[in-house]
Length: 541
Image (cartoon, rainbow, N blue to C red):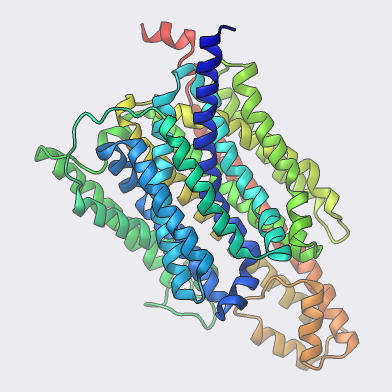
């Protein structure tokens, strides 16, 4: 290798490291906050529902602003948008670390970090396209996606260690420092020239934020309100769940958004999203598969930590360690596939990735029972990691290569919107199915158990109808003791809860398995030929 080639390779590696670090941090926060919720709530003197609201708002801000963030990057330059996003994100992280109440947490984490992420993540997609040749993009996108997925897996370990030995605040202070380093390194990233600056479509922005915001918020609240029928004791509007009306209303506003965008284009102005971008079959296929990948990924990441931390009562650190097979397998697949098979068919790799994820879910479904240990998740997680890594190695390149490079900002916004929608729906769907089955199974089990007095059976049927919390044996025994239950009744209820928890997790995993099978139907939209390969060049010629 010549000195010039080595220099180019080192520069490319530095760019990839910078963008990958950005993707890692953008994804890390939610998983850290999830494992630190109880401690954060105590420190801020707020109920746990307050922290859950902050998590919901963070997801909401990101999901609603991704399209706008991509368009801003197209107008002012992707590297500049990346840098501005880093500054906003670092300020938000520092404010979060200093937070003494819920309001400050909402401003620092949910709002500022969410806005920063909405500028950074679409820019990352465009900057990869602008800094790597088409033949090198599958590997680059694979590593970027792997960085995000690994952050999800390592979040519980990092959050658990920080909360246990230091403070959750140090995670956010450290993020501010890391973002400052990323900002410094970003000067080495090549900027694609901005061909023309056009006014931002403010009406389109408002409609997209409102439409996506209402729909995503409705999905996120389904665990408390229900999907269509309102939960017992919960709010209702015309006899239906508020979530149902929010999702319907949001969908209608999104439809109005696209009508408005067509009008803007017809008047010779610049829309937020050009509808003709969806005419690219390959792009549609990539966005759909991104949606399914993150739906399945977030659903599994909802179930497995519950099994490890609640059913088996492992610490946050031990839970994070048990998730390591997924991180290792994901990174190996994301790096190895583009390197070993640079001209492999994306369609075959994506299909193989979905099948591997399906096998991992089925292995969990068959392996988790009343007598399972933590070791039961190792092989399923490795299969899931290989599948996720396979998808990560292809989807980013597939979506961006479907359109001219100057439209990569639009693709970045749409791609991150699809991933956030998938992640929101996956968590909500897995959670609602799990809790619904857990509730029904536990009530039925208690009412059929001869060791539970009739008075307790009747009381359980009334009090648990609104939804059963996913409790560990220790927490349940403590609650039963506080309620004055006898040892025999407590043991009987704990036994029924153990069985109901497994049924709930099995139901959630079963639904995810069916969705994985359904997603295979859309893999035909993936190209047969690798973008940037010799064969693709010959076909284009």
